[in-house]
Length: 340
Image (cartoon, rainbow, N blue to C red; front, side, top):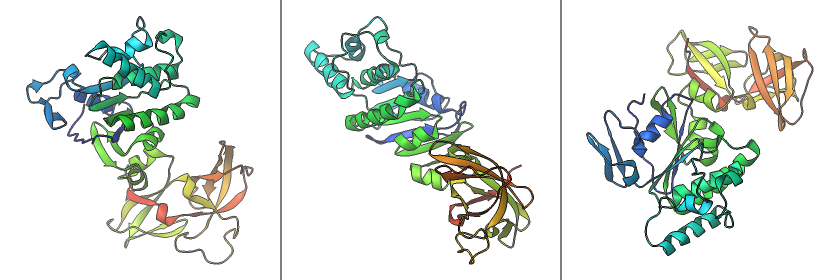
């Protein structure tokens, strides 16, 4: 179910519909494509209404390109025939457009091959070329990279984005992966329960989440619960300003693991910390794991047994039971009303 969704995508812009499975992303895309009809509302493409009340333009007449995660190539057609499938006009013009697109997707010599002779990444690029061949005004992409090997995915995403920008189509990309949205989108629309809960540039959506669930969708989070009293909330790291919350109201102070810092220099015993750093608090290591580019260390704080996670660059694997002092970046914390 989708309710009260309003989107606008400009030519040459990539807007990403981001959210968990079942939140309404693909349904929204299918209504724009004309595969499904909305109960109410309208869809306009380049100012032209393609769906408004009882009027609905057929999908093939909307000037929309479609890409899905299964690529949906015709197995009995060659690569060149797949790309040319939606083209009209003189044979020479169609052949030139096919050659142009296969060159763009680095498959210039693959025209005579069939889909079963291609790798997953190559099939994805053929599907992209086929969708772009008729020069659609709008490109709709539903989880197009989810079937690719992780080693190939980033490179193919970047190449696809470059081609889409060059073609100048308005792009609506559906994904459940925050990293993909951050990598590709000019604008992110975060969906939950059939509604858009936040929309903006990737930097703003990530750094100014509308609520705790929005913050948690992009990364792991630490949550410190407290009670707002006189616009202040006591925590293991000192008092936090919590204006706008009623006296006695429970609040959640949210911080991402990369902004929880280990106080290697002071051990909590040196000069007073800056206001931005807050007060150091002591915790005991529960476990530490090396994650490749960083280490994830979990602590049980002396204060109420609170468990917090910290991302530490490089290799840092203190044994369980090690006591360390921690600080948090106050300017990187979010304060929300406590839920539940």
